[in-house]
Length: 447
Image (cartoon, rainbow, N blue to C red; front, side):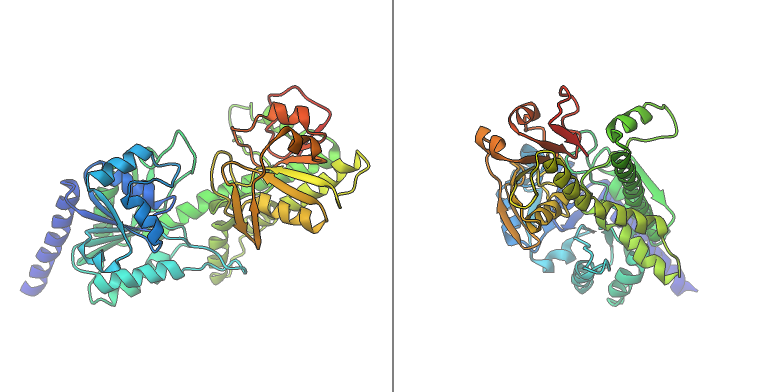
């Protein structure tokens, strides 16, 4: 009996010591993956005085950070420079330093392969790196979006190969990222943070850590519940965007203006939320993340019909845009084949330099296959390399606009003067309602 008693004392001491380090902000924090999620998180922690080490495989990225150069829109240049100059943030690809960390936050990509199967190779790889250096008194928290069960089924067995026990020697949690790139109102600090621990001790430590820099932490009963929360949030958006897209397709057939219909519907003060149609969905969250749940559900002999249908509907939108482009050109007795088409925007979202999964790329590709001469203008993503394309933005000169047979607005960036575009372009297809506040013009066709 004495042995177990002594063990629990030691257990309490390990946890107590780690919590004290966190509360006094003397804990060393490691952040693996310095992208859209990892870098803002690292800067927030460094700003309040934690010593933060960022780990990234991309050596060029690490060198940029160590020079105090920012490459993520949601991080303020001055804040990054400040924490680097004060020595509170340093970046490296030396994983042997993971053993020095008291808390390790994982923000690595979780892509899907071509068959929409989750690819957890990055998560597994970094977990193995951590396991090699794991010591008593460390917290490991996964922020990457994934299917419910990853933290416990994939990460835990790898970490416990070290011989250390979760909940007594080390602590394991899942706290899904909730970054909305380009959102001026909600940042890492003021976005509520859901945290699920593998066990009560892990939850306690993780909540203590996240509470140091985030205004509201929302604890849930398990890592699996936290994983499900994230996938549900993204599925909610995917399904509602798909519904708006489906209504757009129907309004197109019925010769109704979908934007007028939706704006009027959204004046109702209860029971509805604004979601708009578009040329398709991009980024990581909406097109990809719901498929994690779809994939995991099959293990339980469960079909997630809404998710599958939403994905299908959203993926069909680029084809619809190209079909509608052909109809718009027909108004001038022109064929898509041989016509000059200019796309305004390659980023998946307005005022953002990210073209991951952007529907504009699919539209570009489909237009080229149909024989159109396609070019694009986007100051945010001037060079696009994806899907075998390697293309550069053209300048938005008067000549460029006048000589296009059709201009398609695929992304709504605030640095484009749409009034000028309407004036100079012979025909336009607006898939984002970017011309909403301009006087209506018969050369503009809406999605």
